[in-house]
Image (tube, rainbow, N blue to C red; front, side, top):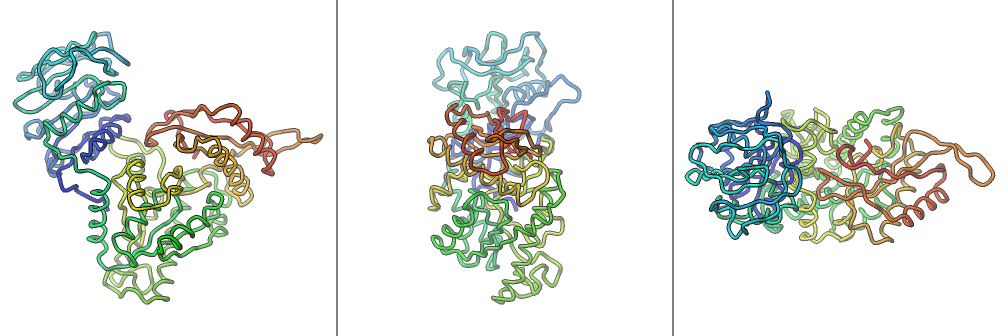
Length: 539
């Protein structure tokens, strides 16, 4: 279930490809206005059915003069809804409304100077010249009828334009990036002054709306929560518990693929601090058995996701037998704990799915990069209705909500951990021996990152175990053991990431400790790949 719509109409960000739409949506939310990303293939009637306060066209990697090139239903221009086109979006609205976009032979990439040449409500209090960020090969050469050009750059004669009667605006530069000095102010003028969108998207309002949405969805039915110990599932559990209290039972499945000391922390936080009913399922043997001989990353994810659900179904049956909750046909856990008398879902399952999970798992404009455990790894015959109170949130919003709910600092600011656990950091077959090697190496990486005071600065820092062995020398003997790869990245939301420049002395200390303390390892390497082209996780 997707929660929403927000009480006030959302600002829709139309995705024309690349990573632009995600960044724009984040910037809109940072202005405390709710935004959603939509596909450019949606019809005007589909977009307007969401009652948007405004619409923003994102940039994209294509040229509007390519065939085919992403486009949008032109009926949207007659809707009266304010529109802001950014880069490709500005060129598209220019072309569709009768202007001209041409390849001049001189593109602009990076920082450049913008000169204001006309009055525009989105340029309120802008200086005559300022620095903006450009990334385009084509240029707007003729504005459509009814439009006026309001700014220029050295290689973009029309760097901004608008139709004052229809509240349609376009900018050739990227206001969503930090390199555009007054980009945040431009977006705020569009949101507040043009769209009339109130800054009501706050952490407390998010909690209030999602609490009500959860209550509306589940009624008086019992609910299970898939608790992993990570930030996402922890915040989802705390939020749902705030909504329905003792109706919630959290289920922590120890897959044998968890981080060091994870089980103890989950027990302490949710059972002893929050007094949430917690079922601890020790299922490592079942997961290792199911993964035996499996090396394909997607197959691992599917196997883990399906086994998770089967275990939840078993827990549901046990709860029925123990507590007698639910009656057949009322939407609660049914007699078998799997389906009710009408073959409908037997109950509700909470998952910590986030907005980037949904986006990255594939859409009309974005190819599937990898299926996420919370999105693509569930079996088709799922016997639960999903409760996903974080599905519309980015990671920074989730952390803020967690703090507002009173979760411990150690959980709220814990680095992201994939749903399949260490399985997607073990390249090749997953075995108990290899999992233990990686868990011990990973604990050293995290401990030394914390000791260096870098844990909060990094998006993720962890160890990876490749599917090869290397020759080494320890003492006077030859060894043939595994290498461990250190992976550390910086990011705002995991949509893009850069490899972290860790101090040499820190790398040396981690390497020395891993080789000396972790049996089965004789070499340590560092992954210096950014995203793109690589992903953060190895599988």
